[in-house]
Image 1: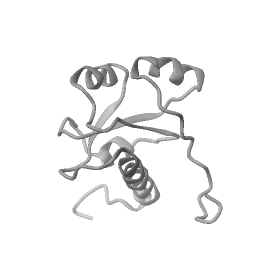
Image 2 (image 1 turned 90 degrees about the vertical axis):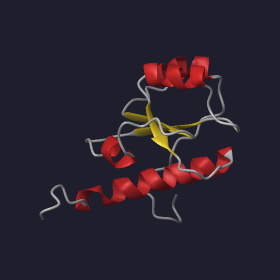
Image 3 (image 1 turned 120 degrees about the vertical axis):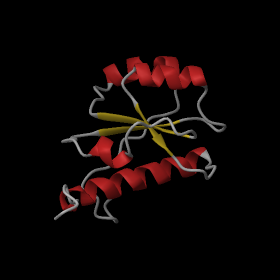
Image 4 (image 1 turned 90 degrees about the horizontal axis):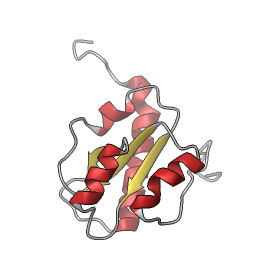
Length: 120
């Protein structure tokens, strides 16, 4: 983070069972925009739309190799997470994490420059 000039270091938690996620969120006081990157088109909004709110923090969840099951996906949706589509490329878990953080960081860095009206 120091080399890249990033003002903060992302917190990275060890792998956990998804059923333990609510306890981790409560224990670590994780809030803000909560996203999970998914292999299917589940999102009703785009990543830009999820991040356009005044976001103090963003929680990004990356699933296991092979993707999230329907049961896991439903659990995340019920827990307040928003789905984000990764695209048609199949990514390894560690690659998906880097991709997700890069996409979120770029959008947050540029969001003050977004045009809110296409007529501008």
